[in-house]
Image (cartoon, rainbow, N blue to C red; front, side, top):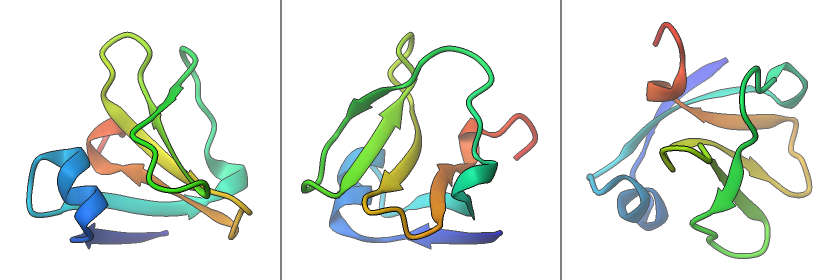
Length: 80
C-alpha cells in the first residue's frame, strides 16, 4: 500500500480542496462489503470514480486497463 495526496486538477474538483488523500491498494484486495457503488465524476475514458449510491460520497477510483492497483479515498476506510 501507498498513501498519497493527489493535487491534480481532477482531484481538486472532485474533493473541493487543494488535494485528495488516497491509499493505493492491490486491485484484487479492494472488496466492496456493503452496497453497490455507482460511477460518477468521469475524467476521461480510462478513469472510473466510484461513489456511494446512497450519499454519493467518492469512495475509490479504478483505472482501465487495470494497472494492478486502485485508489481508495482515505475517508472511506473504516479505520483511516
